[in-house]
Image (cartoon, rainbow, N blue to C red; front, side, top):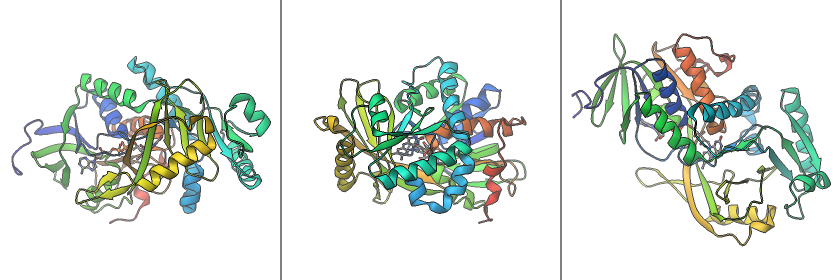
Length: 386
Ligand SMILES: Cc1cc2nc3c(=O)[nH]c(=O)nc-3n(C[C@H](O)[C@H](O)[C@H](O)COP(=O)(O)OP(=O)(O)OC[C@H]3O[C@@H](n4cnc5c(N)ncnc54)[C@H](O)[C@@H]3O)c2cc1C
């Protein structure tokens, strides 16, 4: 079929490639302003349809440990996180939807003096960068979260962290963008993308789409699409593991993380406890499908019940894997200087938290408006040409 116009959309103002949280919100914001938008997504499991729903604000020790070279980038991105959480709240109100969004704060626990000292240094730095954080000893912690295991000695608390249920949020955002007239091209891989004298030609398995402008919102899939146009975006896939338990009575209010070990824990309004934190999955087979590893399931569940022993009797009813994307600790947002009309929209670490706000910033740039934030640190032009 290549060569023929795509049956759903032959010619469009903007083609957004990648229908995760960033691409979807961006398509919605552009469509609200009267721009004709096609959103092309291959239907594979990415980040937005697999994530844990943590609304992160404080720096995650996992990223600091794994990618110490990215810490300056993470610090540059840090002030955006509380704003991104507030943006999620505004988004829920604006859509008149219920995302099961709770702003209950987040606790990063320590199990040794060394870990607590690390949290004190981290909190000091984060306060300098404008975050509302504090470090609690065990007695103070027990007053607000009396369920931790005996080894926990204290925690960093971050007031404006929270959680939401991504299944509810994604469904509401999908309804909103359909209502706004975004053309959904689903289950089709986009690429290669070719620059024409005016605009772009995007090949899909089902025909060609001609677009005035193109946005690469395809997470790690953006790397190959950009490379085809001579642009470097070093976005790498990171397959990760997740679990969810059966429902339990309300126990855990906060978003829970660890100073030194890979764990996130939270309880949804359904009573289910979502357990994640960055345990690896694998990209299996020819299609590199994100696939669960038994070792991650066992280690993740064991650690969860060590941190909160009262969840030990709960049964895990589902495990799954998704693909996170890692760049350099910062988002990749805005026009690509080398290719006029080409834009990138890739959030930084904890990209679901950052998703809607990142989309807003790119939409504003595309609509010729001054974004509300200084977007210069996130320019795609910081990478060398491919
Ligand atoms: C298991 C897991 C748990 C996570 N938990 C959290 C969390 O609790 N909180 C948080 O803030 N973040 C979390 N993250 C990170 C977060 O999910 C991602 O950073 C975020 O969802 C990325 O959004 P996105 O729209 O940029 O990309 P994605 O949601 O990955 O969407 C990109 C889409 O583009 C598609 N695509 C790629 N190439 C092409 C192509 N050529 N043609 C068409 N389509 C294409 C992909 O298949 C995908 O559907 C988690 C990630 C994982 C994997």
